[in-house]
Amino acid sequence: MMVKSQSVKRLRQQLVEWRTYLMGKQCALCRLAINNDMPPTSPVCSSCANHLPYSPHLCQSCPTPIAESQQFCGQCLRQPSVIDHLLIPFDYQPPLSHWIPALKFHRQTYLSQWLAHVIAKAVEQKASTEKPDLIIPVPLHPKRLRWRGFNQAQLIAQGVAKQLALPLNTKLVKKIRATAEQTSLNANERNQNMRNAFYVCAQPPARIAIIDDVITTGSTVRELAKQLKKAGCKEVHVWAAARSVAR
Ligand SMILES: [Zn+2]
Ligand SMILES: [Zn+2]
Image 1 (cartoon, helix red, strand yellow):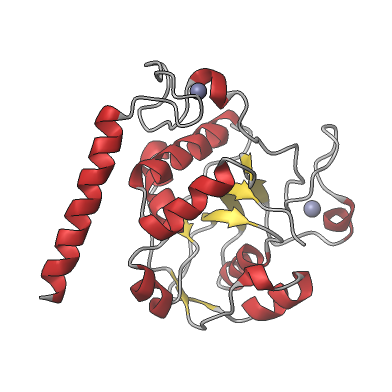
Image 2 (cartoon, helix red, strand yellow; image 1 turned 60 degrees about the vertical axis):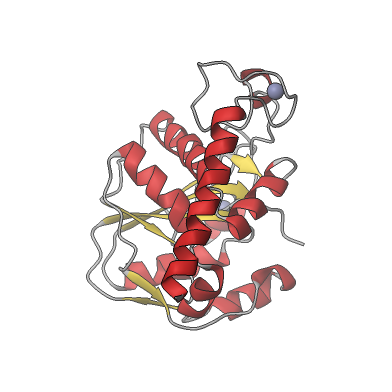
């Protein structure tokens, strides 16, 4: 019975999405028609796309804004981070700060596909770095996964893997410790909270890209990168949809 009611719920969700898809060729911001040159999952028209909150030039290893001429922030120069390449197209400002929670709590597949498209485009434009061997989403603890029913980072990761024709592995890393919601914590508490939260189940390949939806201080992905490197990974990329400014 459980399985049945879940699949009915899923089907209903898909119908809602298809309706949005078929009837909603309308910009979510200005309500004008979305032209055909936009990706089919785009929620905005080309003119509104120009005004989305794109992130400023960031440090290559952490979400700190730096001058265009620089590669690393002072902190990462003094103490190199476990993250080798970081890529975050958006700042977590409206409308992204309205859309991403919608993805997190209501499984908006078209939205995750659009975010994946934007990330994949940004990766392709940064052709200077070598492509990773594998893509992994930041895992959720099994308890939270059961409660939510899906992992939003995994939805984005699936889209990115598909668009860049890279393999995806959702089982390489497990979240073994349930952690407090990071949003209620300061930077130090966040680091503490994530310590030993992940377990790498198998030998990782040399280059991995970790996908997340929103990055604040980066403590989650740093801890995950640390464990991957301990297990033998040589280079960690972090690709996330949006950057939220820490309190
Ligand atoms: Zn528009
Ligand atoms: Zn930095």
